[in-house]
Amino acid sequence: EVQLVESGGGLVQPGRSLKLSCAASGFTFSNYYMAWVRQAPTKGLEWVASITNSGGSTYYRDSVKGRFTISRDNAKSTLYLQMDSLRSEDTATYYCTRDWPPGGFDYWGQGVMVTVSS
Amino acid sequence: DIQMTQSPASLSASLGETVTIECRASEDIYNGLAWYQQKPGKSPQLLIYNANSLHTGVPSRFSGSGSGTQYSLKINSLQSEDVASYFCQQYYDYPYTFGAGTKLELK
Image 1 (cartoon, rainbow over the protein chains, first blue to last red):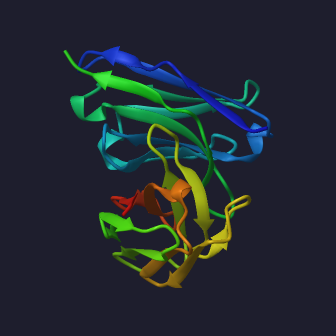
Image 2 (image 1 turned 60 degrees about the horizontal axis):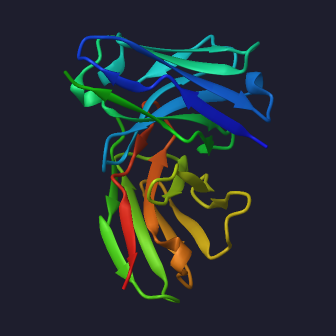
C-alpha cells in the first residue's frame, strides 16, 4: 500500500525557517517524480515545487523560488522541503504528492500544517 | 504561466442528477489535465488524468472530456458521497496550475 507521511510542520515566526519531510513507502520511490502542493485555509490548491526521480532537476513556483528548496533522499525514500524566509502568505497545509507518469498526482499525504505568524 | 478558469464556483444539485464542471486554460494544454475530488478535511484524490482517462478505482459515473483549452468533468447520477470540492489542474507545463475549485452540494 502506497503511503506518504508528512512531518515537520508547526508555528513559526516570519523570516524563520522550517523543514518538512515526507516518508514514502509501498512503492519504488526512486522511480517517481515527487512534488509539494499547498492549500491555504479555506482556499484552493497551489503547486509549490517538483523534483525529478533522480533529484537532478527541480522546479518551483515563482513566489517560493530562492526561499524554498525541494530535495530527496532515495536511499531513505524521503522527500524534503526546506522553507526559508517564511512569510505569512506561506501559511497553509502542505501535501506531499507522487507525480504519476501518465499525468496528475495519484497519491497524497495527509498534509502538514505550517503557520507563519508572530 | 497557464491560467485555469474553473466554473461554476459552487453548484447545488439533487441526487440522481447529472452535473458538469468546466475548466478553461489560457492556452492549449494538449490534454494535460487532471481532475481531483476533495472532501472536507481530507486530501485530494485523483479522478481523471489526460483529460478523459478514469483513474483506477474511480466510479464510472465520473467522466472527463475536452481538448485544446476547454475541458469538463461530468458526474452522472449524483450520489451523496459525491458532495465535495472539485479541482482541475494542468500539468502540460511548469508551473503546474489549478483551477479555483467547485464546491458541490446537495439540493
